[in-house]
Length: 261
Ligand code: COA
Image 1 (cartoon, rainbow, N blue to C red):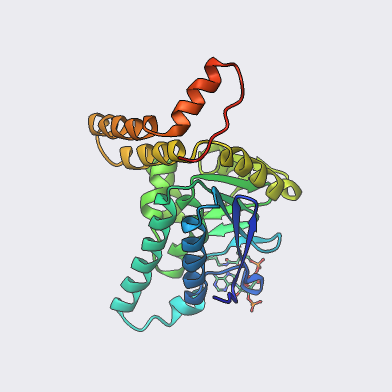
Image 2 (tube, protein in one colour):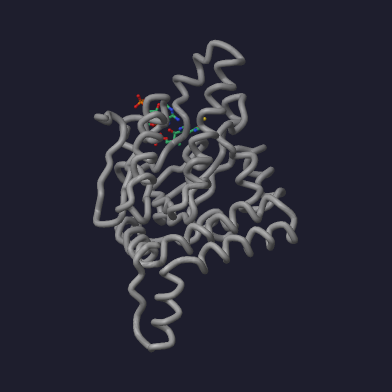
C-alpha cells in the first residue's frame, strides 16, 4: 500500500511509523487512521520486527488531535459512534500488540494525539511537547479512549481536571503526573527512542510479550485474578528456549544469546 499521510521505516529490528500531515499538525483524518492501522498491522505481523516506534513529522506536533474538519461535518449520531469505535479498536490493537510500542512525542499531543500516545507502552517526550484533551472546547468529549486511559495513568482527579477544563500541560508537568516516562531535549528525541527500542529488541520477545499481557490484562481485574494471569504467562515464558538460554548464561557467567522462541 502506498501511504500518503504516514511514513514507515524499518531500521534493523525496529519499525518506525511517522504521522506525516505537518500542514495540519499531523491531525488524524480517516485516511491517516486507516494508513496507521495498515502500517501497524504490517509491523506487528513482521517476525523481523521486535519493537515499534510511533512519532510525528516535524518538530511542532506529534498529533494535534482528530481532524476537526471531519468532526465538524459528522452527519449523524451513528457516524460519530462509528468514528469513535474505529479509533478505539485501532488503539486497542496498539495497546495489546505483543511487541513493545514506544511513543516518541515530538510536540503537541492533543485530543486523539494524546489518546494515541496513551495507547503505547512507553512514552518519551521532547521538552517542547504539550499534552491535553481539549475536546471539551469543541463541545465534545474524547472519543478514542481518553476518558478511560487518562485516569488509569494519572488518577481520577487529575484526569477530570484535564478533561473538564481542556487544559494543556507541558512535558515536565506530564512527567510529574505520570503521563510520560521520560523527557529529553527535542534534538535527542529519536536517538533516545531508538536507543531504548534497541535495548528492548535484545530482550527475549516471548517474555516481553508475557510481561506486557500480564501488566495490561492484570490491571483490568482484581489482584488475585491478575496474579493467576501472571502465573500462566510465567509458565509460557518458562516453556521457551530463551528461558533455558537466559538461565544457563547467568550460571555460566556470560551474556545470553536469545533466539526469540
Ligand atoms: N484538525 C484539523 N486541523 C488542525 C488541527 C486539528 N486537530 N490542529 C491544527 N490544525 C491545523 C490548523 O487549522 C492550521 O491550519 P491552517 O494553516 O490551514 O489554518 C494548522 O493546522 C496549523 O495550526 P495553527 O492553529 O495555526 O497552529 P498554532 O501554533 O497557532 O496552534 C494548536 C497549535 C495545536 C494549539 C492549535 O492548532 C489547536 O488548538 N489545534 C486543535 C487541538 C484540538 O482541539 N485537538 C483535539 C481535536 S478533537
